[in-house]
Length: 201
Image (cartoon, rainbow, N blue to C red):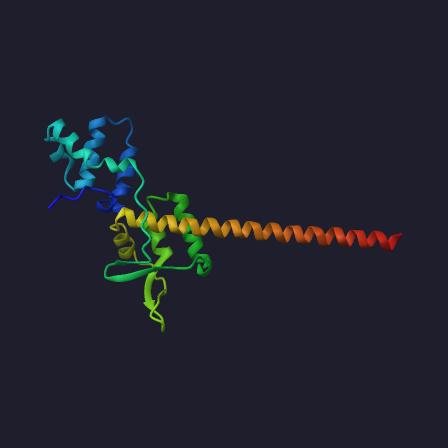
């Protein structure tokens, strides 16, 4: 049986967050980056990797060349965390508290807080009378937030991208709606002004 080539499904959100931290190392050498990266990806002590030959390190590192590309986009409608099925909360059903939390976490760093943001976007699901999955109530739980860090990055990327498109579309529609309202108000003001001028003649 042919061995599966490694891809983003082999990398968790937790590992991706740690890889981002490695990139922030001040003036690292190439081998230092590769050692730290492999330590995260293979979940082993960097000291053990430092005992490998440079050829072994480079050979193992080459298996993760996909890290230079974006993950493939998955379109999962539901997914499981700690045995529970999670579903997306429709954007128009977000509470002010949800939006404030997401805004603050994004401001503090999108990737480091992505697991928290996802728990606001996706809630434990329940089936309605038609058998369709709908989101249940949100209760913040740090254990759940931590569990979201173990989701594979191809799933996380798809979930995040889907949310981004919804928000972008919503903001465009909102902008168009506000522009239309402003235009209507301007026309009303002009019409009223013209009528007043007619009356004063």
